[in-house]
Image (cartoon, rainbow, N blue to C red; front, side, top):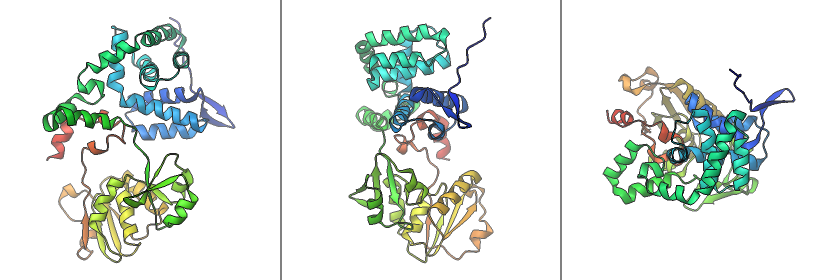
Length: 362
């Protein structure tokens, strides 16, 4: 039996391992890591992109391929089944997903999509991949029509149980709009950290940012400058998360309890609204997430936070909290299904289980 060909996506450069083979190879590597290791999609692609020798346009293409495949996973697998009736091995399927996404949904130039995708495969698989992708090119109109005739959960690539739940609660029209909304690429928003920089200076320094008319503390940015994050000038945050903090209406000098604080987006905004004066006791039960909270607060120059590990489901009140006088206000961002941010957290839908909704109600 001939040894299986193993093609490494890495090469050496100045003593460092960096990804080669371009955006498609990075997207494929990310898909395989996501499938095999069950890690969060954002952390996988961020880690690979940071190590890769890519131009900005190639990096954007890698992100588009990776997230695009995850958004359309069920639909792409339906098309694979249309093109090949027999079982498709997992590594081969990942390559086909990438190719079909480019040909049928992204409208990449056909020759480039087929040739470059075939090159990702070991030699023993290239003939079948080439044949299937060329068949998809010829049958494009038919494949798209067949997809439209599939149930909502297939054509929009959502878990079947979740779509059935939405159909029951919202009806077909609203459930369909919700699924389609989840599949739109999410814009990037950031909160200007007024503890480090004022709005005028931020807009002058980062002219590519656009302040939101109904919430000037937040900006939308297409190409995000990494130094803005590193300097603590802003924090990646959806404006919708600010509503709870604004309703809390914390004042300088008050005592605030943030009961479910990590990773710290709301905590940082509460500190900003308090002008860093007063006390915030920030709790969470996960020590790793608390470490992220601590790092975020340091980067944002938040100086009025006491961080405490505590699981509120255990019933007792820790002495560190009991020793504090009555809190003026309490913020509870309780764990939830996160279906409201599915558009932004692309792989969330594939981590949800029916039992999760039962547990949330208990």
